Amino acid sequence: MSGFTYSQKSMEIAGGEGVYLTDSEGVEYLDFGANYACTPLGHDHETVQSAVADQLDDLTFVQAVYPVETRQRLHETLAAAAPADLDNVWVCNSGTEANEAALKFARSATGNTKFVAATHAFHGRTMGSLSLTWKDKYRSHYEPLLDETEFVPYNDSEALSEAVDDDTAAVILEPIQGAGGINPATVEFLQTAREATEEMGAALVFDEVQTGLGRTGRMWNHERADIVPDIVTSAKGLANGLPIGATLCRDWIAAAYGNHASTFGGSPVVAAAAEATLSTIHDERLPAHAGEMGTYLRERLERELGDSVRDVRGEGLMVGVEIEESAADAVAALAHDEHVLALTAGKHVVRFLPPLVVDEGHVDRAANALAAVLRKE
Ligand SMILES: *Cc1c(COP(=O)(O)O)cnc(C)c1O
Image (cartoon, rainbow, N blue to C red; front, side, top):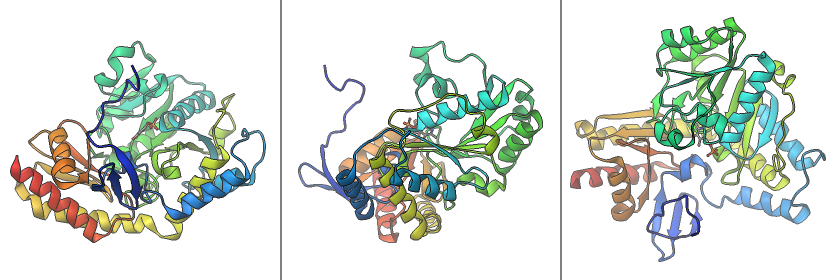
C-alpha cells in the first residue's frame, strides 16, 4: 500500500504557471481553488521562485536558534503585516501547528484551561486543533479529544457570552468559516467575542489561516469588526505553496509562551518564500485587488445563476455558491467539462478561492463555467 490517506483526482498534474495548472496530457485548467488558498500569487511566481533559488544557493537549513538574515527579514515583514500590537511572531510549518501554538500559549498566559469554539469550525487535524474542529467526520475515529472544550452556535452572541467564564483560556474563531461552508461571522459576534474574553481575562484567537493575507479585501478579515484580538494564526498561502504557519501574538501572550518549539519552523528556504510572498502582496496592493475582483465575481455569479441557486456569499476572493445539487458533482463536472478547478465546502457549497492575481477575464470564465455545469444537471 502506498500514499493511503488521499483519494485521487483523475488527472495527473505536470506543471503550473500563474492561474493555470497543466496535466500530463497537456490540458490546461483555470485554478480557482488554488489548492485551498495555498498559492495566492499563482503557480511558480517568479519573485518567490528566485528568492527560494537564491536561498538554496546560500544555505538550505539551520535551526531557528541560529540567527539567519532571511529568517530575520521574514520576522520583520510578518510583524509589519500583523494586526496592530500582534507583532510577536512565532513561525512553524502548517495551519494546525499554528493553532496548537495558539492554544498552548493561551493556556500558559492565562493559567486557564477551557477552550470555546463555534459549531461548523475547522481548525486543523492534530489532537488539540481537532478538539476545536466541529464535524464528526474529522473527529469520530480519534476520540477522546481534549475534554475542556465547548462549542457555541456560530453567530449566536448570547451563547458565546455565556460560554466564556473564568476558566476560559481562549475563544477561537474563523472570521469567515471556510470548510464549514463559507459562513461570514457577523460584526456583532466578533465584537462580542472580544468583549467577553476581555472581561474574563481569556485570549481571543482568530484563525485566519484561510481568510488572511488579503484574500477577503483586507489583510486580515477580522479588521472589518474594528477590534484587535490577542492572537492571529496564519498559514496556507503565506509562502505561496511551501509549508509554513505563523502565530502572531500580543506582548502578554508572547511573554508567557512557556516552552514550545518546532525543529523546521522558520526554515531559511521557506522564510525566503514567505518574505517574497508577503512583500508582493503588499507592493502589488493585492488585498484591494482581491476585494474588487471578489465583488465582480459575486456579481457575475449572481447574474449568471440568479434564482437557480440558494445563495452566493463570502467576501473578496473567498466565495461560496450554495446549490440544490451535490457540490462534489458540480466541482467534478467543472474540472472535467470546463477545465476549471474549484473546491467544495460541505455537501452543497461550491467554494472558489482563486489566486489573488486573477483578472476579470478569469472571473468571467469561472462564472460562465459554473452556470454551464449547473444548466446541465
Ligand atoms: C486549512 C485550515 C487549517 C489547517 O491547516 P493545515 O495546514 O492543513 O494544518 C486550520 N484552520 C483553517 C481555517 C483552515 O482553513
